[in-house]
Amino acid sequence: MAQQAVLLDQDQFSCSVCLDLLKEPVTIPCGHSYCRSCIEGCWDQDDLKGIYSCPQCRQTFTPRPALRKNNMLAEVVEKLKKTGLQADPPDLCYAGPGDVACDFCIGTRKQKALMSCLVCLVSSCKTHLQPHYSVPGLKKHKLVKASTQLQENICSHHDELLKIYCRTDQNCICYLCMVDDHKGHDTVSAAAERTEKQKLQQRIQEREKELKELQQAVESLKVSFIDQGPAFPKFQSGSFKKKNLQFMIRSLYLFFGPVSWTGYGTTSTLS
Image (cartoon, rainbow, N blue to C red):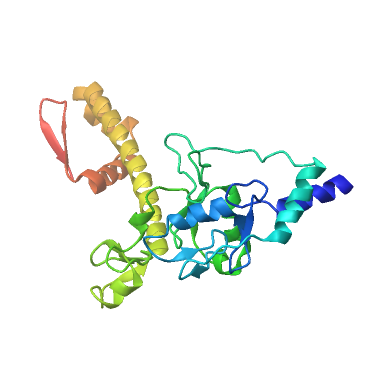
C-alpha cells in the first residue's frame, strides 16, 4: 500500500511536457509546474508572437513571466528519487513517417498525436490530450482524428472555424463570412450539409445498383428475343406473360428512354 501511495504521488510531480519527474521545477502564474528547461523550450517558440501560454490549460501571459525555482517541489522530487520506487515510464508511441506528431512534445522524438483540436489548432498525444478532457473551458473544443490539414478548417480571411456551408456558392464559410460576403445566401451548418451529402451518396449507390440490375435484364431480354427469332409471336402470346414484359419495358424506359431491339432482321423501338 505504501509503495502504491508513493507511485500516485510521483504522478503528481511529473512534468507534462517530458513526462518525467520534475527537474529544477518552476511554477508559472496559472499554477502549473514544469521542468525549467521544458517550459523555456516551449516559450522560446512563442517569442515571435510575444504571447506565452501554459501547455496544459492554455492560459496566456504577456510579457513572458520570470521563472523561479519552486523549492518545495524540488525537495519532494528529491525524496521521491531517493526512495528508489520510481514508476516505470509509460509506454511511448513515437511518431513515425506519415504520422501526426504531438505539438506539445519537445525534443527530437515526439509522440504520435491521437487527436487534433479545431479550436486550438494543435495535435496532442495521449498525455497532452488530457487537459481537453479535464479543463472545463477545453472540454467544449471540437476534437477530431489527428490531422496535418488543420488550416484547411480555418477561414483564410477571418481566422475563424469553417462551421457553415453556403449552398449558394457551394463552399464552407465562417460565421463572419455569413454576415458579410454571404449575407442572404442559403446556408446550413457544415455538419448538416455533410449528413445530407452522405444520404444523397447512399441514394445514388442504391440507384446505381438498380440500374445495374436493369442493364442485366436488358441483356437477358436481348438474348431471349434473339433465341426466339421468327417464333417470337408464339413466345409473346403463350409462354411469356405479357404483363411482366410490359412492366419490364416501362422500367427500362424510365431509365433509358426508348430502347431499340435488333435480332429479327428488323429494328423495333419499344417505348
